[in-house]
Picture 1 (cartoon, rainbow, N blue to C red):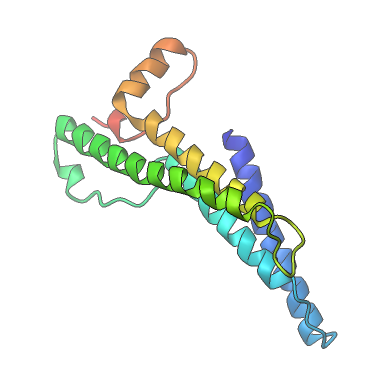
Picture 2 (cartoon, rainbow, N blue to C red):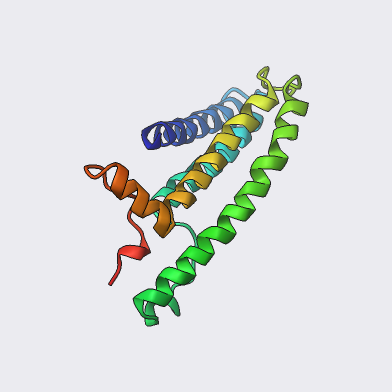
Length: 164
């Protein structure tokens, strides 16, 4: 799944670059402005944001303040990281639940410049948020122990719990 997320993020970034360069070329060289590259680049940027956040969550590179945590012993550090992951899971769970009606409501809508269902783009963002939820569950110490028990040859997601 991580490879798929990285491919989606890479393709989104490539698409943004190509479409914006095309818009600049058409506007300033051909003196003709296209209507669709700006809208498509904005949609791809939103997809890149959510998928990139999921990749960051997998590698435990999401935003956090660690100045105080680095001074704590391992027991308290694990406690506060677990608390942080639980709060993150609650927040992400709310997004997952309330975004489903948005996807179904916008499935038949198409943007003016891009003839693709807006619900499809929201679905891709929902998949990124669902991956974030799965990776947050994987960071929990209980889940890490279960993963290590069920898949001894596979490495569980590394995180701050491994620090001495």
